Image (tube, rainbow, N blue to C red; front, side):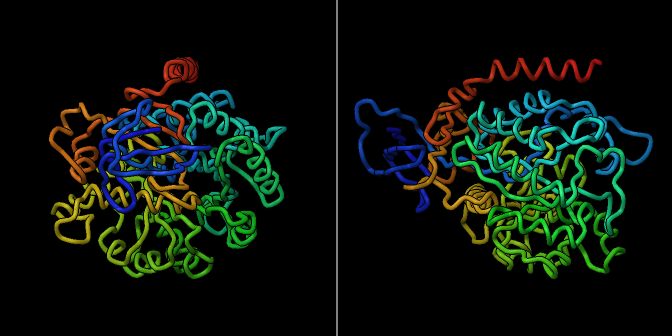
Length: 449
């Protein structure tokens, strides 16, 4: 049994909360009750968050693309650095890097990750004997760390709109319709032993998939999530207009069955009409504000989207910095910088900004990763985070002020449970030391040879 002084439940904050866990799920919640002998006691419980968009291997290049180049640096120049980094990654390397990324996610408030997995082939661009070799390494990292996994195998066939040939740097990503179905089956096999793991499908972007290919691979989703990059960059929008006369999100809404199973990642550069239509589709926007800031992508049109009741989840994308509170904080701060105002995410006066951000990310994140329930309620996965009551940032706080201080004053996380298993204590994952040491060996070899 777990007992908390206060916990954030779907109906709001509750006091003296006793949570019973059975089979990885929350079996029962009692409020207003004293703790019993043998209960594990903590101060503040909140639900774990979903990380809707991760490229785990990119954690290994965090900080390596911060040197000014000879011309204007942007997403496209960063992409070339990323291609060079992954040139020599082996399956062992990917597993070691992913394990560290997943440890950091758990330590910083994420309990499930949507892995947008597009590194399929060997360094020469040749398929592995087992098409799911790399997927199995992602699954192994998830199993070692205990994080929940939604695996999203990526279909990537082209270098730009209209079926343009891929570049040499994209050789490790490539699939065609004949090879992608076996890759999906291998992904399903790779995650079969993981508790509550699930499988979706991820057409990379309209740059990388033709309309005919997109239509064909949607049938492989089998009711799981569908994730796609859309409108991350202004050049992407311009290239899409040149190809078909429509903007990326506009084209998707006009030509594909976008619905609540879909997650449009980034969706940064939309017209007001696109923004309202995306909200009305029921799909989630997968927002990655720290990566979007790092890459100079732009700022999501939140004012119009939230006014239309749009759903969103948050993701760490390039994993340049992994922190759930940091993603939520950046969401709000970007809007403040754009509009030169404060407390913009809530829709009603007097509402907590932290609570509005958190509630939206909990609901939209669960939807984006194909989870039937979210939050701390009976029947949901027992994925909990306890905040460190001894952190000065939480002194004297209660209720929504706890969330505001966690997000905006960087209050610390104490413990994390995934399916009722305690993985993080005192802010540290139980396997941190061995995973960090393996990661260090891997990166020393990659960067020094």
